[in-house]
Image (cartoon, rainbow, N blue to C red; front, side, top):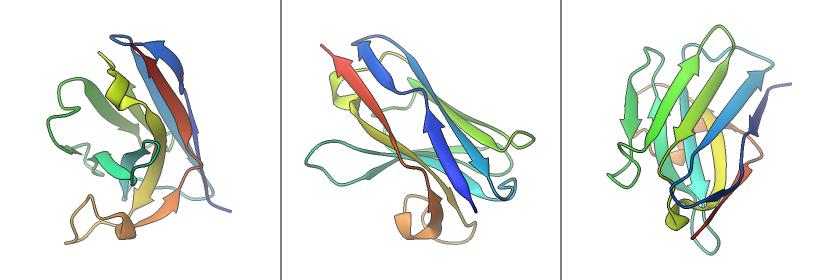
Length: 125
C-alpha cells in the first residue's frame, strides 16, 4: 500500500519557521515529481512547489519564492518544505503529493496520483 505521510506542521508566530516533511512508503518515487500544495479555509487547494527527480524546483508565484525551500532525498523517499519568514496568509493545510512526469503543467493536480493526508500550519500575527 502506497502512503505519503506529512509531518512538521504546527503553530508558529509570523516571521517564524517550520519544516514540513513527507515520507513515502510502498514504492519509490525517485523518478516522480514530488510536490507540495496547500488549502486555506474557504479556498481551493493550490500549488506551492514541486521538485523534479533531478532536484530542480518549480515554484508557484513569488508568494513563497525566496522564503520556502523544497528538497528531496531519493534514498529516503522523502520530500521536505522549509518555510521561513512565515506570514499569516501562509496558514493552511499542507499536502504532499507524488506525480507523473510529462508535458502537463506541474501545478495541474490531476497529474498527482498519490496524496498525503495533510498537515496543518497555523501562523499567528
